[in-house]
Amino acid sequence: MTLSVDPVPLRRSPAARRQFIDEVIRVALSAVDPREAIFRRAQRVGHVLMIADRAIDLRAADRVFLVSIGKAAAPMADALIDLLGDDLAAGVVVTKHGHAAGFEPPLAVQVVEGGHPVPDERSIAGARMIETMLRAATSRDVLLCAISGGGSALVTLPAEGVPLADLQATTDTLLRSGATIHELNAVRKHLDRFKGGGLARMSRGAHTIALLLSDVVGDDLSVVASGPTAPDPSTFQGAWRVVEQYRSAGVIPASVRAHLQAGLRGDVPDTPKPGDPAFERVRNVLVGSNRAAAEAAQQFLRSRGLNTMLLSTFLEGEAREVGRFAAAIAREIVTSDRPIARPAALIAGGETTVTVRGGGVGGRNQELALSAAIGVDGLDDVWVGALATDGGDGPTGAAGAIVNGGTMACARRAGIDAGRRLAENDSHGFFNALSATGDEACGGLIVTGPTGTNVNDLLFVLVL
Image 1 (cartoon, one colour):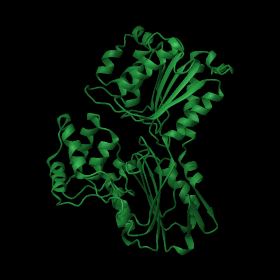
Image 2: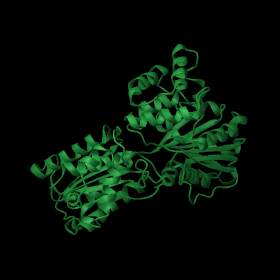
Image 3: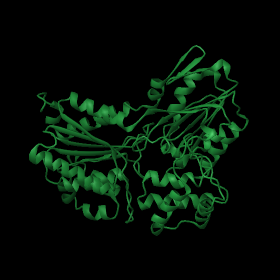
């Protein structure tokens, strides 16, 4: 049924419509604010810390340790530091370069900014700090972990015989090949001593509670940051299949292949599985997800008079193909008012991939938006926005892009070849050239800076 409320902001200028979409984005991001996500699941009453359904008497613990990793590590750690106060003995926070700005923890907490999406020497340094801190942990201690997306690259302890350079090359090859996060992390877990339950083993029987902000489709906690506190269902066999599947996309170093083959032979033990003693005193708690952000956006759009539909939070596939699909849905609504009548807002969440074939610069959300722009060419009152909720889309300073039915006309007037840019994986170059026109009606980049959160991507299709 079509709502009777007139969405006034949508009847105004293109600039006002762009501002409206920016407001939708702010609402979605606010719903997954990492500090608030912690406070929704953790409270303190006197000396008792309540997390989900667990009560932790801090007086009974010898020491309380904190480990926070991922793109949202700083704000999540900040919330836990507020709750723990003087009961915190020591902590290590590892986040992406630039994501710890303004974070001022107590002296007992060490902060490291590491490499992402490819690990660097600081990623190893952060992992070693955590390992050193927990070396003396016992069953009388409490370990609180805050884990968010990006932790796979940011915290790394390469397996024996696998140099960092080889781990970097493997990560880069799989990223450029279009491997899914599940495939990439299956390999990472079997080349790294921290991932796939490795942190749980390091805890040495301490009472461990991990609070996770999910950035993976389906909220599989064994995949978030490669599951450092979760049993690992993946195997050496599965990791080997991934390497074999994508070996034509680039070089897989000899050390990586040798280590995986040793695992296949049983010469290297596999990651800990469900039922392993390492998890006897470990509890994993989901505190935020892509669905929460998508539902907040849907509620806001509905309140402004749009007919809304949350299509899915399991969106995957090649970014440009998803962009074509988004455009096809928009065209269906314009033509037949299906699957919902206009004014319509469709929301989806997930994580697409890009198989890099060209030499351009871009990100999955910008590539999705560029593809959608080609598909909605000439459709009045159609807007498509694609957003990386962490504020970083690929190796660019943008979080994504917004396009509309007039974007291609703007590109043609400016002499920008959208098809060539898409073929070259140069979506960022396309939108930079588009922004040079100075015409707000053309759409353009979404620039938020680091948001402090990370719950995958969001896609908005508005037909007004």
